[in-house]
Amino acid sequence: MTQLYDKLRAAIRAEQPVATATLISGAGPIGAKLLLWPAGTIEGSLGDARLDAVARDAAAPLLARGVSRQVELADLGVTLFVESFVPPPSLFMVGGVHIAVALASMARVLGFRTVVVDARAAFASEERFAHVSELVLEWPDVALAGRLDARSCVAVLTHDPKLDDPALRVALRSPACYIGVLGSPATHAKRLARLSAEGFSEQELARIHGPIGLAIGAKTPEEIALSILAQIVAVQRKA
Amino acid sequence: MLQHYLDQIDSWLARGERVAVATVVQTIGSAPQQAGAKLFVTTGGAMAGSVSGGCIEGAVFAACQEVLASGQARLLHFGVADETAWEAGLACGGTIAVFVEVLG
Image 1 (cartoon, rainbow over the protein chains, first blue to last red):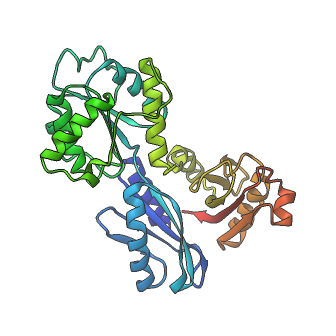
Image 2 (image 1 turned 60 degrees about the vertical axis):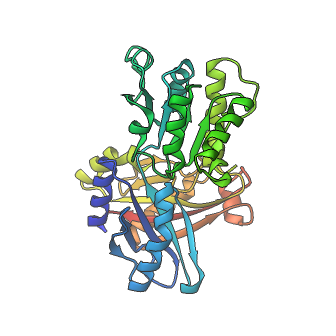
Image 3 (image 1 turned 30 degrees about the vertical axis):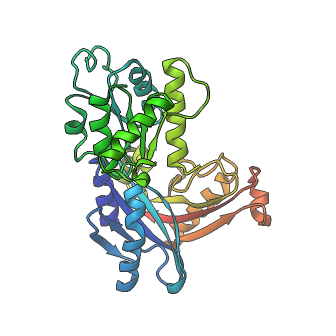
């Protein structure tokens, strides 16, 4: 137990994702605990090898999404509490535009790690984005490749297909939990037609929230940022 | 939530205290804290964190002290259907399950 806490503590300090599964009721040693790492390895035991394996399989998808909840294993007559300890999720903003300035500020308040990506130095300037966690001066497809996990959110904001489309291609092939793109319904219809012609299915394209944000009649960059974040929270909370 | 309390826990453990942790494991209906919310209580009676808006903290604090004494982890339920919980004053109308265990 002490060893498990020490490992848990070290992982949290190092911002490494980890989950615990604790036996909270039923037949077995109440309070027994194991640690689960994203690779699927476990440490500790709930007192039974078969239960450990079932707990691992139940906890893995929760860890991937950063969810903590009770899991009832009726077959085995036990209830577990799975708790995910994960670093803050990232919001990737494609386009160092005016809306990104406000969106990054407000996303930070909500606990996001903020990343702004733009290939254009005039937009992705330190002066405009001193407040973000990370500023990447690079083409969006290069910058996003391999960086989107199941908790990542992507807001595509440039209005320019040369930058927007490459970002969407990478996002659509990733497990990102939220993909939103700025632009009018007409612009969005053209965008969907282009991506469809490239071979993306209707189901894949349905992951894109476009026009981005909840329909609250937002006008200012701050209001648009609010509508985007409200939509992200709704998706995260499955509202 | 645990990440905010690591320093506090370190300092408690360093001065030889034992620590109980109460974790919200389930909420049904309106509840002020989500699953994973934690209250920490030491053998010396120090406290940090929260498992509710304050309404069941007293009862959970007492349970933490019992668990520190017995070493036996426990699952507690609070809610409108439970007389003692109503006495504990869960006025928000929800039900909360809280697991109490010894940390470290």
